Image (tube, rainbow, N blue to C red):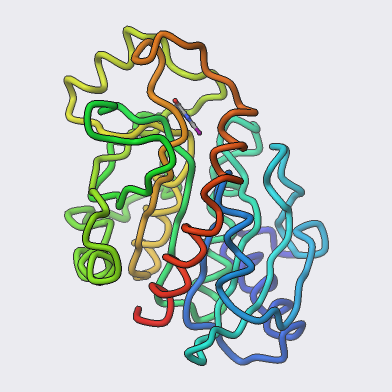
Length: 267
Ligand code: 8IG
């Protein structure tokens, strides 16, 4: 048995193709906390497989993450893989586990990846809770990288300008921002939030950046969208609460679903 992560991704991709009866998929979407309820708007379900039934995947640990991969056909005739849940670095399963879904999607033929997440907002002056923000760039403070060895990948445009422009044609009011990733699972201290604002960050979270790097390694074009679910620690005078994050997601699911459904058919 070969446990190389890229080989495992190929095996998982073959299983997904088989279950859906499709040779390839156009696009993959990773639905972060708050985005899972939006998945139903993307298209008609063709097949659904729990993570636990696929090579290299584990059931996700976080409440609010569904833990399966759905194959769908969109209204415009595209085929999409929707990852309902993801593995986070803070779960301690390692970097390969975090990016396994992205490598599987790439192996399944996907050329465009939509990474969604819920994030803390670093600019409450201009960001409303419940607003989507297009990720324009990232600052990777996880201390990790999915690539080992002398593969020097260009990260000048991790989050495709073409895809961001396309989403703004659908919703011109949507803002852009720089996403900062920490390993977590703690939220930040107020001092760390002040540091991130000084560094030029607009959003803070615990996902997405390693997946985006793995996608670029595979030559996959990336669209990143954050749902702002709370102001960063110390910015609002209130403590941070995971339940509140999930509630914002439930309240905004319909809007997010409509946005993504329109975007996927134009990618
Ligand atoms: I939702 O404020 C969500 N995820 N690191 N900080 C970090 N991750 C988050 C936050 C936040 N909000």
